[in-house]
Length: 294
Image 1 (spheres, helix red, strand yellow):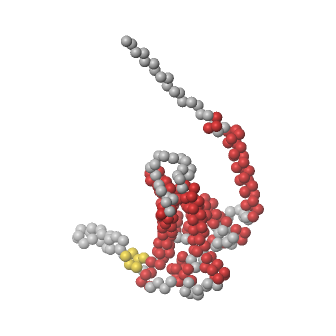
Image 2 (cartoon, rainbow, N blue to C red):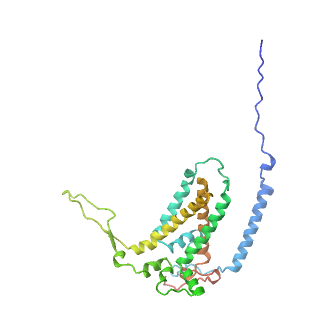
Image 3 (cartoon, rainbow, N blue to C red):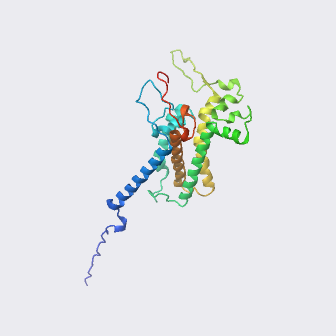
């Protein structure tokens, strides 16, 4: 008795439905046209309320005041006002680029890749992280420029005399607190330099001197702010059961970075006047300087 075996037809992949496609016209071109209109209107409004004067032809003997970097580097120039130059210009950008490159290796979950706000608490994490980063960055800038102490003195009369003067900004802690003399020249030995000279005794030993108040102001406090505050934010969200996965933690960290990047750029663009002083945008003036002086 013979048995007939009938092969089942293989299902062919169906073409994508029409509603899954996006055409260049009108879908893409229309959105780009609306975006161009919004950008043009925003540029017109900004140019109406913010002064952007045209200066004379560039002269190497004249340094404008303020002299600013291109807009995409103004965030780094802003960091230079608050911490050690090597940290602001080299260490901080390098460390953050390494962290960005390590994000895919830290989050190994393949589910929901490429989906914005793909986790359960993504929206809440983004909103809270953005608000904390925005407010925290502004508070740190205002504190380090002495504006918080100025406002407290103007509104509440809390001058504090010499007692609270160290709270005016970070660097006033270095100059106003009664540091002992030995703390400004701490001798330490980072490594022992030995050069074999054939006698087995070794070479000279190099000692280094550390200015502890300067190190505290220019390096320790900025490191605590850059590392400790984001860590505290993620820990708090974790305790609230908002940060559940690694992706949640990265979302909070990346949101904070984007907001801080934007705030630093805006402050450097529209709030830094002559001598890099913090001013309102409508008080921003540019002086072309005096020839022969920097």
